[in-house]
Image (cartoon, rainbow, N blue to C red; front, side):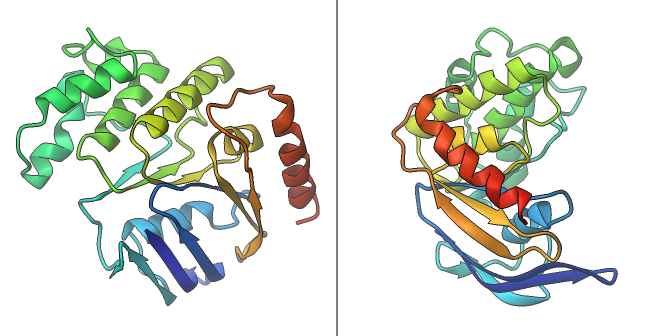
Length: 240
């Protein structure tokens, strides 16, 4: 579903990424981890079509990425909800932007799936941070994207809420699988969610290793089987 061939990127004299080769399958969940400044978020923005690579090429579903695509959604660290719109109206925003058919039934389905049923008429200031990020997740899913790009979406939340949202995301992915690229600093999040984990070296970011998790879903934090993968990832980051 996603292919990166020899992707490098530089900006303002900074060489952020160098020679990235990566493929992500149609229903595969790939996490990207690495030290701060290694180019994780830059990689995500390149796949999203928000940046143009300095070298190499990126394709989604066999088509070269030259601009943002309707079938690719992006979820950032902050929910970025419009404060004057209700929860339902925020979820439906991409539908309006892309001029799609009415998606109200789909929006209600997603809100129920993520525990937000009954909050359709609330506004962002009436919600907790975790609830706001659930709204952002629903908004990312409303147009049934083939690809989801997620840039540390839970990093600003407390530990309990992060765990709850990881569980929500697992449930969503099991119900409607799609290609996901998930950038995170958290080894626990990566091991809990991903099929494969890409470890980037310090800047310029290069693929140091790709680790297969190889464990069935659903998974839970504290699961003994996850410990070996976590230790391997910590070893790779310490020696990076």
